[in-house]
Image (cartoon, rainbow, N blue to C red):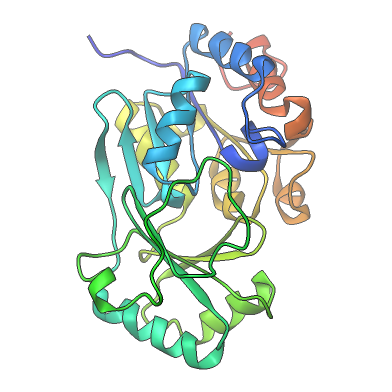
Length: 275
């Protein structure tokens, strides 16, 4: 018989559940186990693809599903298969890419298609822990997006996130969703997609009502998710904009803040469960 959960809690990974060395602490793993025993489905809601999310979820005890690619993908961790997958079509996406190349000559792109991450040369200036990707290409072109794109990632060495995002918004006539990942990436997603949409789909898939949903994150791409949750939290190291809209601020990722959040929910200090 399917498991009946009392509540759902979603956690971002990088900068939130993961510590500063991109690992999951024993304290967080123990708290996740406690939460599951209390009847809470604790899942990842991340910008990452299903490939790396599955590995981290297995180590951490997260599941039974995951929200990946900032909400564009729902992933069943038991069967390693998609529950949902939203993509962007090639023609409008290439229109955005070509216009951005003119406006921002030093822009570099990476294309994500479910579990495939294809960067352009020089997209990475340093290794990213836990990230696997395809052999870089000189330039993303139509052949690389022809089958549809889950997410398009971009960055510029001369512009910060917000300035690049503003330029993208000006030429984004196809109404793709825009969000901000990592510390310098801008991400383009299918129309209407964000982590909030993904979390709502996850709750529906697991049969959990909206008033039994919690979420915790650290960055701008977590704002919608934390805002929609019955209880939304930010780790202490979070972006100031996320902290401003959160119901709760928990200790930093280095101090196992996600574990504290789970423990407080289980104990009733944070009201989410019927005690």
